[in-house]
Amino acid sequence: MYTKYRKLLLASSIAMAIGASSGASAADPVASAADKVSQDVTEARQETQIWTTYALSPYLRANDLKVSIDDGKATLTGKVEESVSKDLAEQIALGVDGVKKVDNQIVVQADYVPTRSLERSYGEVVDDATITSAVKSKLMWSKHTGGLATNVDTKRGKVKLMGTADSAASKELAGRLAMNTRGVVSVDNQLVVDNAKTSVAATAKTSAQGAGGDMADGWITTKVKSTFMYSTNVDGSDIAVSTNGGIVTLTGKVDSGAERALAIELAQNVRGVKSVTSKALTTL
Image (cartoon, rainbow, N blue to C red):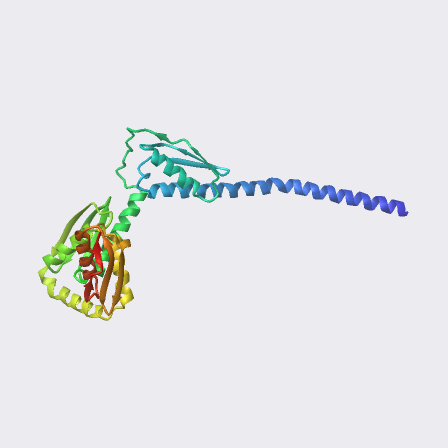
């Protein structure tokens, strides 16, 4: 009796073990499929990250580069004009998390001319949006153009200004601020001087300038620095800006007298600035 019970218990245990083993085996394909999907998602993310970086890079965006990822290995194909571009593409791929190796099959062809589409590329759209935002910000921060009703449109670095200005001087300044913005190729200044709105705009400017006297010094400092950063002909990284009671002090070194004069003019134009002290801003 006891022996039969022991045999029955042993048989049951073996059956349970076999069943558990079979269940694990049956679950393996599901686990493997889930792992494969997870890997595919990761590789798609890596490919997208590399492609987006290429699209945003002014040195690579025009080239028809392709990238594929397989188990941590990135394969790059396409054509570029210079070897430095090929090296840049490889370094970008290696910088992506999870990419362990790069098979760089990009061909360097000295006479290669990328085909430019009639439609703007992703990188160009981003650049144009950045330029539009920078121009709008500079116009809004300026004590002389803050009252303008201006629409800014940018396509491939070409800026179009539309709307109304209260004076020819305001229109001209708006054009100069736009032209001096980083990335701008040309400016089509279509602002219309509307004398009928002069009094309204003047009132708005007077109110804005009055409010500007009470603007925080920190706000003024930030806007002056941002204006330098957005500008083509001023290296804001070499200029220190501080503000006390609306009086802006510029210190540092610039490359030329023209850059110094432009930095002072840009600072003076920012809303809330009462005066600019620039004795400590010298040329190299």
